[in-house]
Image (cartoon, rainbow, N blue to C red; front, side):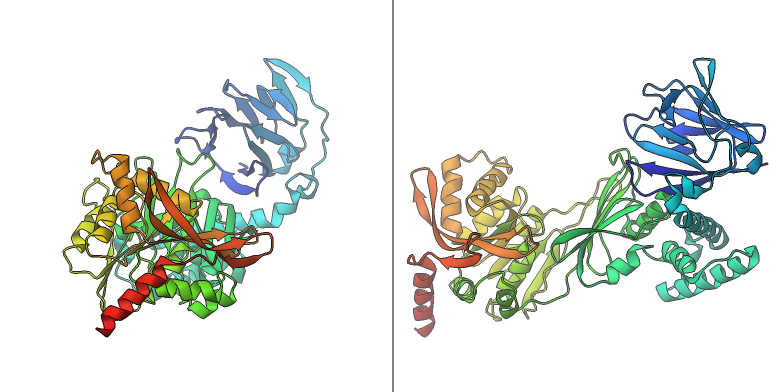
Length: 541
């Protein structure tokens, strides 16, 4: 009896391939469906494929949005031909593999029980004449990878504890040996590329292996298993890498999060974790992710940028860098603000290079990224809750604990909640020169965000008292921005000069002139320079 191969596209994206050998085959949004599709336009039990003689037919199960084949809404259609395009919601399905006997019959559609012949060619058409024809070789390769990957998992039991005693190198070598034996046993013609794809998906990160190894890539974004984007030099680009199936992507995600005591499923559909090299990952799966599992990897940047390199790259001017160095030496508390990927952590890391090596520094981060290189440095990292929602250690808890560790300066990787009030109190009670980052669109907006985050502590403080704390604690705000070209620039450096009425007063020191594409100094007198002179006099005495 013939088996059926189906290629599936979503929203005109790349096609994926699945093979069906059990009928009737259910199609729908339900987790029990043999072909599971997502989206509100797909019914829980949308349709099913049934065997009819040597062919197959499509039967709509009374779905709200219905099924369309070759542009016409149908209740039943069959037998199916390779040229037939089936539309289900935002998905397009097409027969890829079908026995010749079924193709020789003329397809018909049945609308509400009334049979109507469609104007279709009776000849056997190759994939080259179909809308998906250009993907034939890729689909066949995906099919082979899926089959080898499935049989390799069964042979080695890679998903269970029987291989846990292997080191990563031993596991890779053992898997390669079993894969070679499997190819010989089955007689399949597997190219070196296919074998490498199977090996990467079985014990590595699949198609992400090459991307992880590329030093120019700063972020990897998997929108769904067959659509991957990367960020290079600040710009997003689509890449050819893709997983062979949704199941392959989920298996790799499980391999990443399982050693961390985390899990990803319908009960826990969002997970934040970290790779062994320090890269941060975020995973969100259906039903929250409507188009399939989404994976985002923020690469851990091992590059150690010097002040000279940032000036040469056009991030700031040499005068701005000297000013920031003076601000750190003068023990002004600094806030680095900006959007996602604007370079806040890189700038915080660089500013920490100006700290006196004799000072004791405690850093607190949600995910450890700072590389300070200081001799008297304590690095603390938060802990997320476990699968039972127990054991969480927040940034605020670590900030409070850090104050008992006799720090000269505190470095908070990112303020995003109630920890802001503890950070401000630390800056106002003998820990001047502390630094943090936060998300904001401008220097003025960063102060408004600090106010909001302080209110999140539920201390019922009047807004005037909060603003007084901010004006007293923070000396300088550095605003980072990522331009449309992908370049990161220091768009603003402002000083806080006090509180006038109900408004915090800001004095601009430097700014990025987007019209002339250059940095400009305001020429106004600086409180930082005055403070630096006082520090120098104290040191001399």
